[in-house]
Amino acid sequence: MESHAICYIFGAGERSDNPIILQAEDLVIAADGGFDYLKDLGLRADYVLGDMDSVLSGELPSDVIRYPREKDDTDLMLAVKLGLQKGYRTFHIYGGLGGRLDHTLANLQILTYLSRHDAIGTLYSDQYAISVITDDTLSFSKDHPGNTAGTICSIFSLSDISVNVTIHGFKYETNSVTLTNSFPLGVSNEFTGQKCSIHVQKGTIAVLWYLSH
Image (spheres, rainbow, N blue to C red):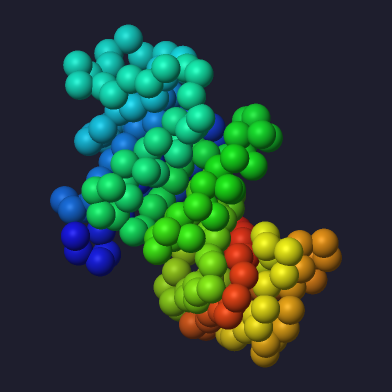
């Protein structure tokens, strides 16, 4: 598996107008109603899976992977586990935000699951994106979408305590601060348009940034 290969997963939630350009080595999975999302975009699906309770299209492929409606894993979790089994470690998830709040919270937990399985996932809505890292560093290049001076980027501890959080290249920088999940100290930082990074030595943090259109 090439290190830059991406597993794209499409769910049935809020859609994004952000451009999606697939490469030959990328894997594309439609989770249940995400099949309609992909169909409307005119993009291919390597796998279609789920309990199929929210698909509107009547043109499902013959090799769809069906699961019972009563199951422990959500359809997006099934898609993530498949991507991990196929060797992918970078996940871009569309249609996983908006709609039902419980689904949004479940998908944030999926990002945490990925961060603790040697992978990183990003949830995209039309206006913002969220990534989760555990004992790791998240870097933004100068040309990263959203890295425009003044664009908001907020950081939240998902674990009880996140130790030695270091933020460089943003408007507000830190060196080895402690964040907790009971006080929003990291809200409303700003990109500067320069290369920047967020590191947590021990703990799990969510990073939310707004997208430029």
